[in-house]
Length: 247
Length: 247
DNA sequence: CGCGACCTTGAAGAACGTCAATGGTCGTGG
DNA sequence: CCACGACCATTGACGTTCTTCAAGGTCGCG
Image 1 (cartoon, rainbow over the protein chains, first blue to last red):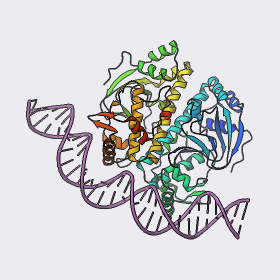
Image 2 (cartoon, rainbow over the protein chains, first blue to last red):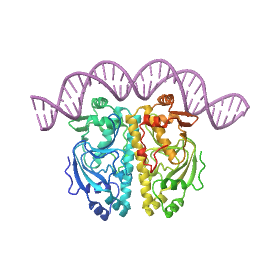
Image 3 (cartoon, each protein chain N blue to C red):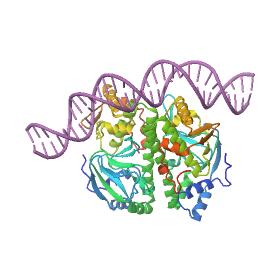
Image 4 (cartoon, each protein chain N blue to C red):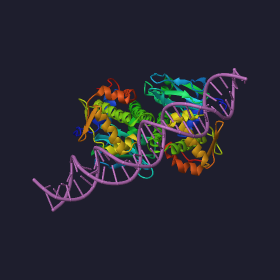
């Protein structure tokens, strides 16, 4: 959807600058990181449950997802990632993966060796703090999904997911005017929301019927942002964005 | 239940030593942290949703829980904490709380100012890494609860919680011989598992009926560890403990 | 043109929630 | 030591949400 920017690591610079202010030296150090670019087809894993990765994955284009499979084809998608995110930053400190990471759409990623990231955060404690903070926001999103799965109905959860992804995409300039490219199938939404695909479809019909959204040909349009937030009881505090909240 | 050790911060030293090896200097620096000791009655909040805390809370005795309230008395407990844990470590990097923290039983905590923790991690990057790792394990537990709430039945989820807490308590020497002090009421378990208290009771009867556990007068006894793990599909990898796994 | 992946819909059943009533336990104060 | 009250556990009956199974239908692409 988006052309990869001139320098792939600019994506990371921009992300971290939305969190902390970087010195010229820090910016240069990030841009000097070695990165191997890879394009992934939809559905492809990049790290698997049980792996011991030696590199981190920066999303440059497309959507990725963390997920965990348990017995008999049961799967839980744990979170979605968009350009600028580093979904497996945790592997810097947790040797063995307890879940997997895959592409939800055709995606481009940059692979950065742990070794170089470790050197970076040793030299620049400020960057270490920013990356730590990233993983803490990740955890905050997990908590919010837990609240949803424990306490909210299918319709509310789905509305909440739409709000969350719109705000996140908007914050990095990948969504505007309440329209988003939405590459996630209903089957994958079922995995993410802890529902059956049949019920996902029904919840979707419900939101459409209320005139809150349309979703067609991989494009999500939010017709009534206020009402959607209300259904979702959406409060973006947990995303810990710096300034503005939402659209 | 446990007497507070001679020096309260030894609890933190011990916890971090189970993760990383500390130098004499680092150990001393931790022990030199200022700590205000407080005892909390059951149910009391120590930090609330929306607060901007200026200190972190180290659990010395008792159980604590993070939780989030949404409309109309709906509550989700997000995780449980036991002695040695620092439940709100995230507040070091995320200014505003997106959930609350309360005592699940009469508890003793040590409050440590952010300021001093920040000085500590600036001086000792090794400790910063250990604390970062702590927050990452926290996130791994969130993910596991998500999988449970999205994919597992009430019985499986409850069995999983018993396994998880037993392993965690065992790891810090607070449980043995498959017996644990279990201060959590069925109502609070309902909040934690995303169920009604009535259904919690029924799932409990089910586990009792299968001869897997007893739970009486705040004491949980696991009668058949292997079978309980099997029901729960419990795999302790996500706790990222160093050596041994379980009992 | 045909295949595979995805979406949609209906019907029946399982899992879980709600409401309501009862009994048990424990700490507190008389 | 006893009595009280608050909180907690338990159980039954019934309603709702969501799942499962099954059968088309649509769309894009080779």
